[in-house]
Length: 223
Image (cartoon, rainbow, N blue to C red; front, side, top):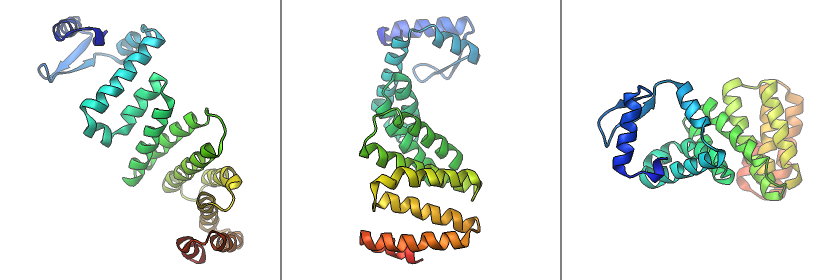
């Protein structure tokens, strides 16, 4: 009911919750932070709200975070992703899960990055099939593969993710995303010791780079 209250009513309501020992207060108003005494109390309060009302509140929280705390949300886009997902704004949530994943990957926080990419993929796979979706899915799977390679090395699980990236990007043909997927395929086989297979993939990369006419790809393929 926060959005329907004025400042005085909100302060009084929060004071009542503190007095009932349902929440703790840290600091002094208006800079105070209020925390539920127990997670079960929070869960019970959340469950008592109708789904439509929960979505309204999550939307409002996301909007306030963007308007009032832009620096915090730039550093932690997963906050916006969480609230937009809970609000049912899945396109926006996917955008911020992807951003959060790439920020975590830049910091070598591979576990967190992988989780964010999986969240983005889950939402993306609920959308209609299209070339744009194939491209976004291939990009996310490739990013997820990098995080898992950092966590697990050339494990069979990573190999399956690589093959998934190749399969998803295959309809794109001679495309930079498909080149990346084939390059990941070469890398995984090379790291796994499957050198004859890796050599065949390397030859394929040289041929694809030639068709693409991209000097950077040619350098990677010959390397």
